[in-house]
Length: 379
Image (cartoon, rainbow, N blue to C red; front, side, top):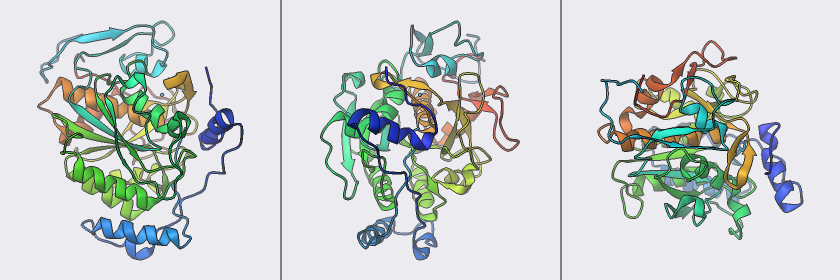
């Protein structure tokens, strides 16, 4: 078992030192986009903006995105289709935690979830790419598109390690929350965890245009997982808003600098929505039901999920809000498959409503004390 811990901003370096025998390049901050692009209206032609930013990149701009690496009583309010099933002896404590109202991870290794398992829901993973042919995905993972300008081609599973680990927490058979959901790999980051805002924008625009087309179309709805972070960026936030308003649910890692999530993108995109239909930003907790030491916080956080020392594909133990976010994406897939009438517009409200309240220690006064809970059944 490989164990990657410590400062989340150093996780990439640890992974690549372990797997490539060398040091990863230092993590760079994201530079500000050009002021003209940032001042564009919510309905700005994002394709043109992306193209302009791509040209800026070619001129030597540093638009690099910090890629966070860092894991029943009847309820008459809803009608649930499907029964509860149990997976025993899970290695990811996060699965056990999100399926229980109390912290019983010291005495249980069970994971209970709705038998529909996320079937009929597609999760687009915008990341370093996903090893779609890995047996853990049982043929449910497919390639989408690549938007990684200047990135070397993928030559091995190591080149997609982070994206594969994220996808595995969302939907793999052993480590995943939604074990029947479909995964679509959208590569916008290099294997080292670097990318351009322009590529992220282009990836989101492609998802918006293709989510309802074969072979990506799903019968019950689509979700986008974004495990990236950088300084506040108006263009990125507005593109996320367009995707969300198109009926595609966006899930965002809150970030890993122990700072206010509202000073980062894409987490700050949640502030553009007042109400229930909006992107959802995810902070990370640890096994003691405390805020993870690295997690961002504040009013731009919607929910908290396990993200410190969680186990994912290849039995890697990793930390980061990158791995808390896909737990929420997987939970949304469970909600949608068990309750087809819900749809994506209500997902933010249901995730917050069903969360376990007021158990997480160390939250700030403006951080919602809401721990992810994976079913609409029971209390």
